[in-house]
Amino acid sequence: MTAQDYNFAYLDEQTKRMIRRAILKGVAVPGYQVPFASREMPMPYGWGTGGVQVTAACLTPDDTLKVIDQGADDTTNAVSIRKFFQRTAAVAVTEATAEATIIQTRHRIPEAALTEGQILVYQVPIPEPLRFLEPRETETRKMHELEEYGLMHVKLYEDIARHGHIATAYAYPVKVEGRYVMDPSPIPRFDNPKLSDCPAIQLFGAGREQRIYALPPYTRVVSLDFEDHPFEASKAPHDCDLCGASDSYLDEVITDDEGGRMFVCSDTDFCRGRVAAGHIGRLGAPDLAQEAAE
Amino acid sequence: MFLIRAYRTTLPRFGASVPVDTAKMAVSRRVSATFKDLPGGQILGPTFDYTHRLLDFALMAEGEAAGSPPPTPTPIPSPQGGGGAATPQIPHVMSFLNRDGLIETDAAGDATPPDLTREPMELPASRPLRLQSLTRGDEGFILSLAYSTQRGYGRTHAFVGELRIGTVAVEMDIPELGFAVEIGEVELTECETVNQFTGSKTEPPQFTRGYGLVFGQTERKAIAMSLVDRALRWRELGEDFVGAPAQDEEFVLMHADNVQATGFLEHIKLPHYVDFQSELELIRRLRAEAMAQKEAAE
Ligand SMILES: [Zn+2]
Image (tube, rainbow over all chains, first blue to last red; front, side):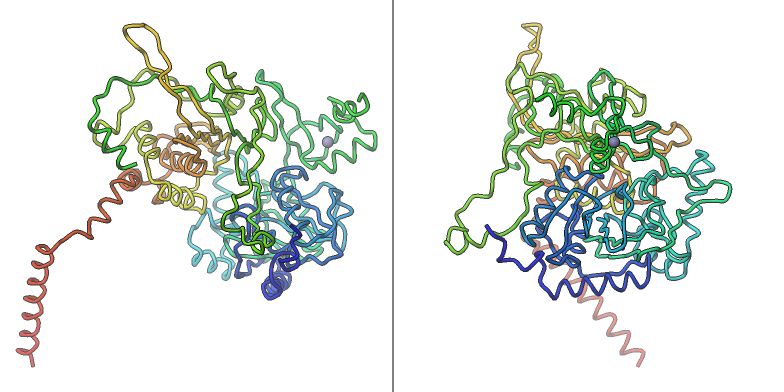
C-alpha cells in the first residue's frame, strides 16, 4: 500500500497547526509544560505517541529523519517509528546523527554533538518532574506557577541523608534558565550535561499526558544539586568492548549464564563510526571481523 | 469462566500438581526490557507490538476490508527449536542479577500455600494468597491499578526484567508410583519486574521484585499483576503507606474478582420491590413530617 491516502506525516493539517502552536509556546517559555490536544495514533500510548506527533508536526518533505530508542537505531520501537514515517511521509531516513535534520529519541541523547538546524524530539512518558512527589496535577501546576520547588529539594536532600547520594539515575530533574524545573525524560543522568547550551532545538512530547515542552537552542539547563553534593553524570566504569570509547554511555550485555558480560556503546551509530575509524575495544569488532572472514 | 468455576464446584479434588517450572517452558515469546541481549535471546514471537494499526484503503476500495484477517506477525521459532518434554531451559533473567546479589531472593519453602479456591480470603493476606487473588482478578481492574502506580499513586519504579509466554507441563505426584507424571500442558504468561528500591529501616538498597503469572497469552495482565504485587509489598519491605489504592491490600483483593463483582453489580437488575417499597414509605413519611414542621413554623 502506498500511504498516499493519509495526509503527509499522518496527521491532518489542522492538527499539525495546533501542535505547532503548542511547540512555539513551549519554545517561548522554556521548560514550561504546554497542554495540547493529543491525538490517538496508530500505536499504543506509552510507545512514543507524543514524540511521533511532535515529529509529524515538524517534518517537511526535505527532512532526513533518524529514530533511536535506547540510543540504538535497530531497536524494535525505533525501527517501527522510522517505518511509520517512511510510509506516511516518504521522508529520507538515516542512522547517521550528523546527517539527520530531525532525530526522534527515546531515553538517550546521541553522543555526537548536535548542530544548529537540527531538531531533537524526545518521547516523554511522565512530563511532570514533581509527579512522584505529588500525584495531583492541580497541585503540581500550582507549584510551578508559584515556583514552589522546595519539595523536590527536600526529596533530593533526604536521598543524601540516607544514602550519601542522590538516588535518581535517570529522568534526573533540571532547572531551565533559572525558572522551571523540568523532567528531561528518562535519559540516564549521564546525558544531562548535553541538555544545556545545545545548538539544536530540543522538543519534548508526552502524548498520553497531553503536554509539550521545549528547550530553544543554547538554553541554560542545570541539573538540580547542592553545593556540597554537586551533580555527577555517571556511567558504568568501563570502556566500550567494541570500539574502546571511554566517554560514551554503555549497555551491559549478558553473554552467557556463567556471569559473563560485555559493555557496548548504547549509541550504535557512534560505536559503528568509531570502529570504522579504526578504534578497537577489548573484544575487537566481531561484526566487522566476521564480515572480513566471509 | 463463570460456568467453569461453577462446574468445578461439583468435582472432587484428587490432589495438587507439583509446581510448574517456568524455566522449562516451551517459550513462544520471551523479552527482557532490562538487557539488550542475554542467554536464550530476545524472542519476539507472536505479537502486534511492532505493527502499526494503519487502515489499508486499497482493501477497503476492493470491498474486502470486512473479511480480511489482520496481518500475522512472523512467528520466530524458539532458538532451540523447542516444544515437548525435552525443551531445553531458558534461564530466567532474574538469575543473572541474582549472581551479583543485586536482587532480593526469596528462600524456597515447603510450606503449603493457602488455597483461595478452598478457603475464604484471610486478611492480612500472605503474598501467595495475594498472588492467587491477582491471577484470578479482573484484567481491567488490575490494569487500572497498575497504571495508577505508574502515574504516582504508589509508584514502584518497575522494569520488565522478563516477560515470557509458552506452555509448561503440569505434573502430579502419584503416590502409588512414587514419582510425578505429566497430566497435561497449560499455556502461561509470566512477568518478573525489577523494581528500584533504595532501602528502608530493615533492608539495604537492592532491586526488588514484582511477579505476575496468568493463564494463556495475556501479557497485559501479567505485567499489570507484577506491578500491583510489588505495590502491595510495601509492608514487608518497610516502605511507607502513601494511601494509594494499589497499596491497599483489602481494597485490591476484595474487589479484584470479576465473577464476584459482575454478579453483585448486575444483581441490581433483579426485583427489589420489597426493599424499594419500604424506602418509598420511609421517604413519604419523612417528607410529610418536614412539610408539617414547615407549615407549623409559618
Ligand atoms: Zn563503542
